[in-house]
View: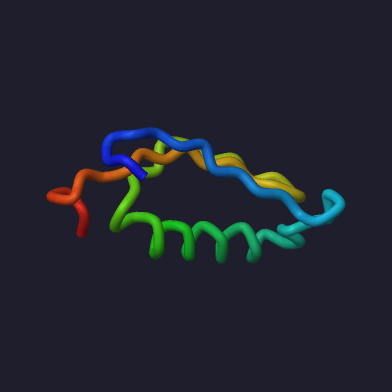
Amino acid sequence: MESGSFYHIFNRGIDSSAIFKSDEDYNRFLDKLFYYLYPSFELYAYCLLKNHFHLLVKVRSPENQE
């Protein structure tokens, strides 16, 4: 991945099955997302739906990584 580049990341459940079954699942996903993504990426937008999600991220430059 190239620093300064934007990426659209998405995923969905097998056969469009639900990947988020409760509000707690959405919150857990966001907690993990920020924990693992933040050091290397800036999150510009996200959309969480019952059976899939979309993320728009920008790769941080090496000097801005935490």
